[in-house]
Structures are given as C-alpha cells and as structure tokens.
Image 1 (cartoon, rainbow, N blue to C red):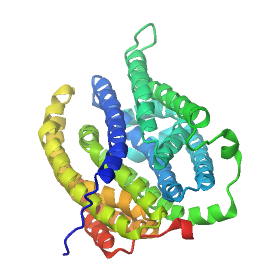
Image 2: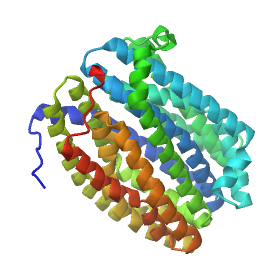
Image 3: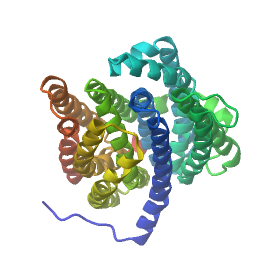
Length: 454
C-alpha cells in the first residue's frame, strides 16, 4: 500500500478546525440534552426509558431522511460556493427547504393517524407501546420546525457559517432543559407529564431552533443574502438535473440507512425492554465520545467540495488522504473514551441488575464499533460525498447493511438467541466492510466528480 500524502499547510488545519469545532460542540450539546432526557425519564423506570428510546428511533428515521436531503444538497452548495456561484447556492437552499417540508408533512400525517401501529413495529410489550404513543402524539407537530431548520442550518456550513448550528444548539439546550424539567416533573405549577413532558420539552426546543435559524438566515446574514423570495423561487431545470444526478443517490442511501437503523431498533426491541434500555444508554455515550468524528466528517465534506469546485483535483486527493489519516487517530481516541467513561455513566441510572449487566457488555462492543464508525463516517459522509461520488456510496450502503448486517443480526438476535453484545457487533459489521471498501475507493482517485462542469 502506498504512503499517504498528508497536507502540511497550516491554513488547511485552521479551516478544518473552524468547521470541526463548532460542529463537535453542537453535537456535544445535543448529546448532552439526550443524556439528561434519558436520566430524567430513567428515574421513572425502564418502561418509559424504553418507550422514549424506541419512539425516538422512529423520529430518527425522519432526521436521517433530512440528513439525506442535506447530504445531496451540500455536495452542490459546497462546490457552487467554491466556484463563487451564489445564485446556484440559493437554488440549492430552495430545493432543500421544499424537500424538507414535504417529508415533514408526510411524517406528521403518518404519526397522527397510526401512532400505536408505529410503536408496535418496534416492540410487542403493551405498556411500552402505550407510553410511546403519548410521546409520538406530541412529536407529530415537531417535524416541520425541526426538518426545515436542520436542513438550512446545516447547509450554512457549506458557505462558511459553521457556527450557526452551534448557536442554535445552545438556545435549544437551554429551552429543552428548562421545559423538560418543568413538564416531566411538574414544576412551576405545570402538570407532571413524565414521558409526554419530555416530548413537549422537545417541541419547544425545536420551535426555538426554527425561530433562531430563520431569523439569522433570512434577516441577519449578508454573506449569502438568502431571502424569502429565494425560497419561494422554483429552481431551474439545470439545477434539478444536477441535484437528482448527485443528490438522489444520497437520498436513497440515507433513506435505506435510516430504514436499516430502524430495523436494528426493531431487532433489539424484540429482545426485551432491558436490551432497549441498555442500548439507549450506550448510544448516548457513543455519540458523546464521537462528536469530534462528526466534526471531522462535516469538515471533510465541505472542504473537499469547495476544493473540487475550484477545480483542483490534486489538492482534493491530498486532503482526502489527510482526512483518512485523521479518522484513524480520532477513531482510536473515541474508542478509548468509550472504554474509560462508558461504565462510569451506568451508575447515574435506576436500572435492574439484568439491565446493568447487559449495558456493560454492550458498552464493550461499542468500543470496537466506534473505531470503524470513525473511518466509514469520514469516508461516506465526508470525503467521498463531498467529491460527488454518491452513486458509489449508495451501492456501498445497500450492499453491506442489507446483505450482511441486517440478516446476520436478525438471525443472531431473534433466531439463535445471541447475547445483545454479539448481536450488536453483527448489526454493525457493515462498518468494517465499508471502511475497507471506501478507503480503497479513496486511494483509486475515481471518487472525484465536478458538479460545476456538469
């Protein structure tokens, strides 16, 4: 294997940090909110904790669909911004806003009509379904506010406004904590709503995100100059062609990943409430310990897209190989953090002995998972996507998750009665395969596709 070319330019690393740190801090705040939510509901027992975790897996399906919209759109916006074509960037925002609105309306209607049926997909425990329905009935009204603000705030990173998402998250953090404390426990004269209070707290948090995001984008920001008239203007035929050429595979692959992620929750949900509760705790720890990885992933996609938009393929290759090297380093760091801090978090929850045992075993599995998670995340959500190699990534997501991980995990967890830790390793086997396959693609140089010359 040939030696990697590592960028030595200090300006490159300053640019990486300018994107990576705000994204990492934003993710840390979001995960901190999730951890506090889990702790608050955990004080009422495993039923409400499991119900909120499973209901949020359905909500995460919507979020990942929005990330698919962002992924496809950011390929265009980053390259158009690199080519200094603001009109095309504004068209990208308009399309992304429209798609997010359409997806949000679909999920809202579905959630309002069949909340019980949605929960019954994830578990067959009646008390967990009952509590989950309470959560879903309120979250149905969150989809539009969260989807549109998430899409537009994320796209602002591609035009050099990475800190917007951080500021939005800080506001959301404060609102969410105050609202959760008020409505979950019934403080300050409010009724004690428990799991429904957690959903209401999330509603107020997402509403605050929506207000802050669009006041900034449509009123304060002067760099892009996006206004309501631009969001209302229908994108051109050329834009549609470019978007669906590069963006459609992202929507398909992220949609299938979201569906696969939900099937993971279905498999774990049918292994019992203890496994669901244990995994919800592990997931929060995993995400807290991998916030830097998410920051590097975002930075790699934006910087790579900007460089390709400027027409410098050689520089893009050097940057891609540097990001691969960084993913290895941060993968090791994240695995060590999960190993050290993971077991320490268990003591803050009110859990049965069985759940504590399962949580400890699952945490050890996550130590292995996060290393490969780092590499495949930086490759699939960052470098290769920023290079416009979306069709290749769609194939990678479909093949490895659906032909390896899901069948293997389902057979082990539901038919062969494997322990939760072994089932989870099987369900994340695609991380290992995708890491190797995507690195090979990176080194081949075939991943670079120029949108601006389409």
